[in-house]
Length: 400
Image (cartoon, rainbow, N blue to C red; front, side, top):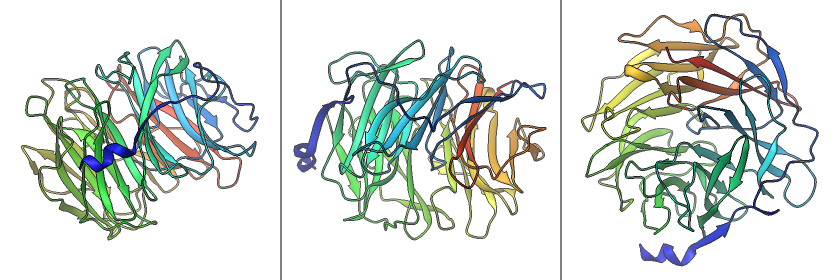
């Protein structure tokens, strides 16, 4: 697998100085929509944006500020597709959108926060990383950053090049705190690729078919002591969801991919979260998905095996995401009948409820969460409106 090393580049990931510049676009405006409207602290903010893929993260809370990331289109030159972020202390008042990255073609991305001691290529500490699948550059890019108040500052990242029509993918910091790992699906030849940062290693599996209309990959921490393992999920062009285990630090698959379930066509019908965020945490990965027959289902991966399938919603659910809270709590968000709904688990699955009561939606979709409680916050972002300008909304629940 050493042939990949010749395609790896180390890059400075900002084009206009070391501190990221603000976009001149007027299309991304931020407004406070409503005050707290139920007993839990809920706020809403609208942002013009375009995003996708429920298994990827677009939001986090660092204990001081909320950060939301989104893809925008601004026809101002050769690179009209902008990866932007906005920050807020209270979830209501947001900073002006700032550009992190530009590209000539649309791309998808995943935000990995926190980084557990990972360094950039200069050996300097970083706070989080963005994993960007740059179709225009035929590269899978690892972009590390540090946070200074509400400003995000780029560090020196890297990329794996020579790829064909890459799709899906997420990034994870390993529990050793020495490097990040990524996963993606390449089209030609069709293969699931894992790779790691800093001193690159990679592996690939060619058994899962690729499709331009269906897919997605997610990589999650699993084993919290040596030998460390990660859990890989991949949806193939045959609409089946597969899993495998990945070794740390070699980024190699332990076995062949095995089937979990058969899903429908598309990219936004599964999401997983892991309780294994720190040494000593439970070694459990939670998964939600929508089957080809329409049911929203749940399974957990523990002791190297999947639990029995549980049907959470029999029909009508779309865009599912899951987040784990403290002491085994789970939060499953999804869209049903034009509203964002919620299934909670706290020792037992609770009845279906509206996630944010008292709010009127306009075609909510493309949900994304932080997937784990961060300083007591379960965060959610989603899109509304069916014609441009679209709006990005934010809200959070207290994990209590």
